[in-house]
Image 1 (cartoon, rainbow, N blue to C red):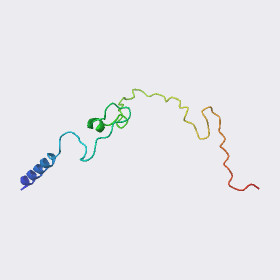
Image 2: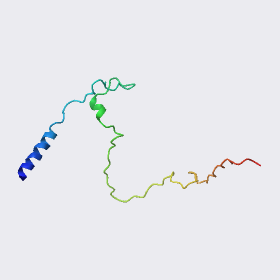
Image 3: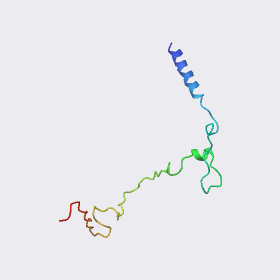
Length: 101
């Protein structure tokens, strides 16, 4: 009984796995491929449209640190209200919503 159940499950898995279509990508019936972009000499094919761009899948850096290093000074890491010169900025006066007397 156990073997029959395992055989049915295995055959079902093979049937489901074999029903996928292997072939070139094509647009749906009644639809056309995207038009070529301005400046392109020819319209992109299905392979070019389905490949992820570098921005979508950026490269990965697996470089390990071999020794600890001090961080460089970041001129933009400032507390609120200070400029890169070290001067304090005075906040602009908010306009008064009350009527002048």
